[in-house]
Length: 475
Figure (cartoon, rainbow, N blue to C red):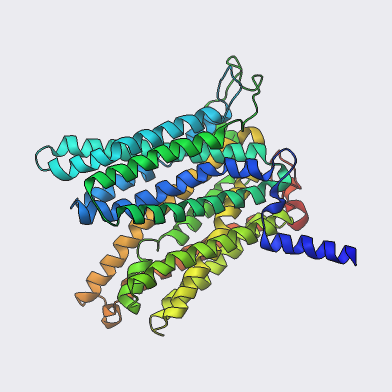
């Protein structure tokens, strides 16, 4: 009887607290949660860039949407720097014996600096852009540039440190928990920004953004404090360090790196292209009220949380990460089919379910690809591997967002002009084309990923343990 009760308790704990068993004696839950605080600041920056400032700069300050788009594109254009940041953090020379902490610290300073000057730069852009266009634009661009560099540096170094600290058999769980914290940061930031900026004033804008700067600095300092063990022998100043080119060549020889990066790019574009147009689709096509479209973000976030939990559980049991990735893509195909079908069926419920399922598939994809990338490289090259993952997914996502928004507007305009046939005059036409393109991208991703799902880890060329995620047993 006692054995049955014990088994029931363990199984229930895994269901109710799916990341409770991510801990070890050397890495307890309190330390994991403290380390994950850097993900909260990254989530806060994402909300600020893609949500709050969109509305404030266009509606309250009257800044041109094209100029705003150019500013917000700067962090995306800097995404390839993640690869260099990861490489430098792998081989950072330091008498103190730290590899990741200097980059977490510098990333924090960049984030703080960008946010500290951002409200003033935005207000100058709003008030004096006509008289001093170059100076006003340079100031605003510098603020977004600094903040973007900070995000890339902080997340790359933070995830690399996570990979350094987590035991091999707990990496999947810890990574899943890191992404839970990212979503929590986004939710908290969205609610906080909405509350304080609902009664807008220039002074309130300055308070909110500079408050975010202080919060970013404080949370990141708490996250990195006494996390990385000092090892001066590994960071000796006289230690030979490979060039970036030789590091890339070495990394590319560890396994099917090129194919994995293609999978990451296709999946990021496939899941992200709809981010800007999903709420307008609900409002214009299905006549959802503001509360109804706001609910979509919550459903997507819940789906992501479920996806993170399921992915962590599957990988923890030794599932092949590439099969998990492919499953996430196929779930995404079903989700976008549901969203497309919601228009002719006039079913808001189907649309909402589709958003939840999109989040579920994306959760499997993001955690699965990150774990697969970590697994591909040995610990001493984890920064380079995570930098490659971040660079590809961020660049693909940025390009997809721009493509999705532009394509939906273009199809709608051509349809209204009668140049594409009667079917394209429907309000859902432009959106449905984008969703269909996402289905194509996800199917292409499955095709690219499927050979990786059958690889025997002993033949992949990596120097890491072949049983780290059970690839050899499940290939």
